[in-house]
Structures are given as structure tokens and as C-alpha cells.
Length: 316
Length: 199
Image (cartoon, rainbow over the protein chains, first blue to last red):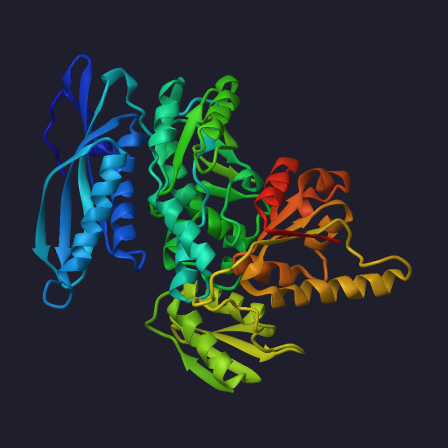
């Protein structure tokens, strides 16, 4: 396929990043992104918040500030009470407000299956765009939310998760990546992405591709929600984790002592996951400490960037 | 042998069908048919977690997961019901030992195993289990209560395992349950708990 070209497109389709970036002036660029999905929690208000946090996250992952948002709605109006939709949109509005952005419109259609999400526009300085694959050898990798939402959501579907666990994972998915992004803005970060459907290693593979570098992840240092291993060990692993793993098999080299449950957790598809940040090693501890002080859900240095040109992910 | 046809289903449906059958019938032997590798692995793990010995077989284009009941091939009753009542208080249990009492070592261990198993009777009020000093040995490979600890975690109990202690015993990489923690987390948990039980 041939895409239309424009010199002002700083990040476009050919780079497959978290969002598109278009330069307006020398010191202002527009970030544009869209994301929507089917319900992942039963409560409509929380679903609205999670879907909005997930859509806003792409702007944060590019190093930007969200400014405006538009609703995208597919709703089975004949079968479902309109109040469900009201609650979803209220959840979205509350999350957009928390991000200091505004809802300026939207579009809804009748759909057999409920869908909700946002199109989000944000601002960034053209020189401060955080792309995915600008890794540098020696960098450290920091993750800002624990993994496990895919496996725990599967356990929730199986009615095997306790109310406390459901509550915790719901709040985690609804948490904005705003604080992480704002904290990162004060540091010379080389690359950033957010962790969603491809899982930690799937998104890391996107960072590594085209970077000319390899990475090493220390699985014991990766923050993971405490119940995840137990559920994964009982066979509550979503199909997406297997797809992610087989898709990236050739790139990923596991040490012998990284067991199958850990591998599945590292490929577990996340909903509204954290930011994965690549930063020079001498700045990494300071950034992790700053993230920790500001109370982001996790602030763990989980690995490092190695010299290329292999473009592999080593997991120990 | 009880057969379950879970072909055409995607995760976690095959595990749920298997779970329902096991709960209702508790069969000695069960064969689950699935049509994809993901379901095969999940059903295999589930049967193993329920005490079945598992064998895998190929049946045409499909996979069969065959489980035979071991000594304890029944569903544990410790699974939390999703409608469990909200806890009225938060109880933190801190174990600084892997034995209960002094004197006979093997009796002490037996009592501790029984204690950990029986803790679930506290229901949702059991909030945190903190393992320090020799207590961390309960969380490592080969511990007789590892499965119980994992079941508590799955049920929402946070298990905190002292990192300094694991390091002291050179067991950091042996830990199989709980989150590695520090003294600040432990002190914070004590402050937040309504009741702290020391062992």
C-alpha cells in the first residue's frame, strides 16, 4: 500500500507507533490516536473509565498532553437500557476531566455488540516526541504498571477471583498514565510505548524492531499482580497470550529457568497497561525514584538495552 | 472415562467446562477434547492444579487432555466465591517461624502445616500473611504448604515475604508464592490492619 506523504508527518503509518504526530509549527505538533473495545468489566461506569484511560494512554506514550477527545460508541439500543450508555459515557467524561482534556463531540451507531472508546488529540513539542524504537545500548527499561490484567480478567470471567482482586485490577486498568508521562517529561528519555494487547514482550518486540539493539529482561524484576501466577498455573491464560507468544517466538530467547507460567505472564495482553520507558542508565534510578515518589502503580527497572545488531529479546 | 468436548471454544471456556464437570461429578478419569494449543495447555494446567495426573494425546486434528485422579483428585473447597461477603475487619497474620512451638521439630512442622491450611476459616477477614525470618521457608520450593499459599493469593490474600530473610537464607530464587517485601511494607501493613496475630 502507498500512503500519502507530507513532510509535516513526524510519526506516521510506516513507523507503526502508538499515535500519529503532525507538526503544525516549529514548536507545536499534534498527536492523534483512536482506540475502542468491547466491555472488559461488568460495571458500565468503570468500563467507561478504563476505555478512556486506555485511549488517552497513547498520547502519554508519545510524550504529549491530551487536549480534546471524541466519543466512539456502538450500542445495542434495542436490547440494552440507555442508562448503561449514560454511565459508560459518564465514566469516560470523568477520566477525560482527570486528564485535563475536554470532550468535544463524538459519534454513535447501533451495533449488536457494545463498544466504547475515544479519539484523542494531544499536543507535543516536535523535539520531545517519544517514539518507540529509539533505544540506545546501555539504556535501562522501566515499567510503570504491574502486569497480569489479562489473566486476572480471565479469572474474573471464570468467577474465580475474589471481590478484592476484581476491585484492585479494575482500579489499575482505570488509572491514567498521566503522572508517569509528566514525570518522564523531566528526564532525557530515549524511547517509550504503552503496554496493551501484545503484552510486555510483544510491545518490547516493537521497540526492538528497527532499533538495531537487543534487550535483556530480568523476569524476577518485572512487577506482576500477586494473584497472576496462581491463576495462570490453573489454566486461566487468555488465548491472546498464546497468540502474542507464537507471533514473537523467533525474537524471544528465554533462559531455561524461566518457566511456562512466567512466559505467559510476560506475554499476557494488558488492558490500559503502563508505560515502558527506555532511559540512559545513569538517569534510570533517578527516574524510577521520581516515579515511585509520585505514586505511579509501579516503577521498576526491569531490564537493559544491549548492543545490536541482533534485535532479540533475552529473558532471564 | 468422562469425556468433555470443548472443541470450538476459546479460553477460558474449556477450563470452565472442565471445572463444572469436576465439581459436579468428581470423575476418576476425564478426557477433554480441544482444538487449539492454548486450550490444551490451559486444561492441562487446570487438571494438574486439581490433583490429576495428565497425559496429552493427538486425536486427528484435535488434542485430547486426559486426566486420572491422583490421591487427592478433588476440587479444593478453598476457592473464593465471587459473592463472598465483604470483610468486616482486616486480620494480618505474621509468621516468624516455620514451626509452631518448641520441642519436637516434626510436631512443630505438622502443626504449622495444619495452621496454614486452617487459616482459611477466617474467611475474607484474613487480609495479609507476612512471612519473616524462618517463616519465609514456607514460601519456597518444596514447602508443604505452597499450594495453600497460592490458593490464598488467588483468593485475594496478600502474602508478603521478607526479602532480607530470603537473601539471608539464600532462597531469593526459590520463592514460589507471595511478594518479596521490605520492613516498611510490613510496618505499614501492621498499621493498616485491625488485628495482628503473631506466630
